[in-house]
Amino acid sequence: MMIYQISLVVLMVSFLVLVYLFIKKAPQLIKLEDVSIKRKENFFLRIKKKLTEISFVKNFSWNTIFQKMLSRTRIIILKIENKIGDLLHFLRKKSEKKK
Picture 1: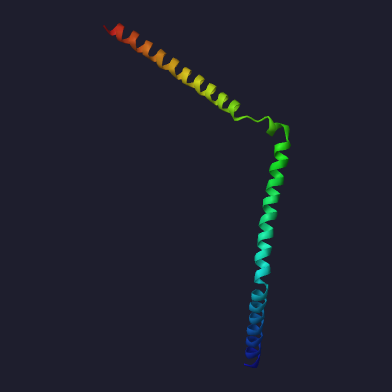
Picture 2 (picture 1 turned 90 degrees about the vertical axis):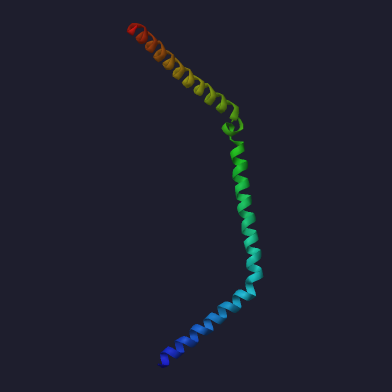
């Protein structure tokens, strides 16, 4: 029973010390969080700057990608249109043979 009471007292005292330290250091912790956020932003800005220095990224253009996509889409549509035209021609010949 005595060990239980001693351990309970030690636990309560250590908890109170933790609360005291947290209250005492809370303003410094808040400032520390702000600094870490700024460091992260600076890190991302540095990465962005290094990426923009690469020649591939400098020459990158969305226009060329859109042009390629549109030309491929146009080719696919023309192929579909050709298949539909062939099917219509086949059906017309088939209907003429039945008459």
